[in-house]
Amino acid sequence: MTTSATFQIILYFGVLLLITKPLGSYMARVFAGERTFFHPALGRLERGTYRVLGIDPSRNMKWTTYAVAMLAFSFASFLFSYAALRLQGVLPLNPQHFGAKQMTPDLAFNTAMSFTTNTNWQSYSPEVTVSYFSNMVALAIHNWASAAVGIAIAIAVIRGFAHKSADGIGNFWADAVRATLYVLLPIAFIGAIVFVAIGVPQNFDAYTIAHTLEGATQTIAQGPVASQEIIKQLGTNGGGFFNVNSAHPFENPSPLSNFFTLVLIWSIPAAITHTFGKMVGNPKQGWAIFGAMSALALVGILICTSAEQAGTPHLAHAGIQTQATALQAGGNLEGKETRFGNAGSALFAAVTTGAACGAVNSMHDSLTPIGGLVPLFNMLTGEVVFGGVGAGLYGMLMFAVLAVFIAGLMVGRTPEYVGKKIEKFEVQMAMLAMLVCCASVLGFTAISSVVHLPKEGFWAALNTWPGSAYGGSDSVYGPATGNLNNTGPHGFSEIFYAYASGTANNGSAFAGITANTPWYNTTLALAMMFGRFMMIVPLLAMAGALAQKKSVPASSGTFPTDTTTFATLLVGIVVIVGALTYFPGLALGPIVEHFKMLALATH
Amino acid sequence: MTDLFFIATGVACFALAIAYTYGCEKLRGRHD
Image (cartoon, rainbow over all chains, first blue to last red; front, side, top):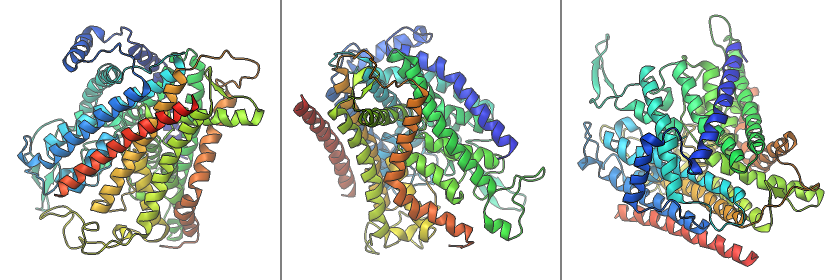
């Protein structure tokens, strides 16, 4: 660990700590329907939205109504995006004349599901595939909508714990509108201006053709980047305006923009822990969750940063200096931008996968085996290291229910959490949410590791078109392992990472896998759908059941859940469940690869 | 034709999620 890495980590956690209480308290007021600083400017817009859409914000929904409203909204936005992407050739704002040829049906299916589920996995190169209209309307709308849905679901789950003997868990439409207008919009408006001020472009120009000093011609892609970038990071969406995402100098021009981006990614997920504490009437409950998330985050960041700074024995064996000195950064710089170095890249990798963001500023495929294990583990444990906007909190509350259940088993008492008895149904729903995700990651990884697709058939063909970035010479792969960059454990990690990323709605890629084939586009879309909705529904069911229960006063037999002991237990449950479920997969991938690296094996 | 296949797959996904919702509610009813 270098001094600059240590300083950056301390500063980052310091800023997060400063943001958490004021933003968390503000969100608690927003979702309680109280008047805030922004109401004079946005209150009329909120009321107008309700009037136009026929929403009664005071209507308290049963959990099933809440879930069906969320699913109907997601389905409508999925269909809209699919249609807009396929029809981009006849729609406006398309100076590059992209059409349906670039956006094939399976790619449009994958992309629409990806953005609907807040995953933002991109099987395509945006610069050569999607028009400005597709970017700004078909896709960016989800950057707002899916983030607002995530926050709304978290608030509904919190109400399950906070409400007493109630039939409903709030109003989905009102929660989504309030999340958009009062949380996302003000921060995004200011943040986009900050991005422009620190060097991120915002225009509607056609791509610039530049002539280099050597006489070559270079096409410089650009567009409305700042306005896309802000909601991409704030909403933990992660879909890049450019193919190399936040490694691109127009998306992330400097260490300052990198730090600003990192703060944006974890700002709402950190703050919503305090919202939880405020809404259940005991802020210490929120700080216990914040503490558990911080501990997991810190360990992951330290492991990833140390592994990348240590470099690989191959470099040392070749006589290359891997120690950081005054003249060079040292460590493993493959796949990293020198303007961020090991510290800025490893911190970004841990943060983006702790959250459901998926933006990348370095190529994760080039991380050392242990450095790459950290992002993989973050996603496999359900992204509860602060997590996605809303998704991180409801994921962690799922683990909290399991933690009090296990603690209850140990002491022989009925488990309670924030005044609610945790009984059979709640534990069943928490387990169902967890098992669906495990089945999706492990099932799709296993099938893709062995399936052999007909070579000239539909499923194995790479989506190609004349003049594309992909070319057309190797357009048919056969087995699903045929389009990997690597064989052996690293190749397995590429498949494992893809389905972990899809199921966890992260969207980052190991980048060593060419995923733009009908097989990967379809199965990854299904993984995203299972990981999002099949997890949310049981958690809403749990919230609905809890909301109907009376609050139980704490007694001498109550296991306190606002203490360091509980936070430690929670960390233990997350790690043990993650380790037990996914250890065989991790052993076949990054762990074997680590030992091969130590033995100086090259493949 | 391929478009129809993928749209139908999307419809099936969300129909499954709605059925799953009522399946969870039915399970809760058994506990009550």
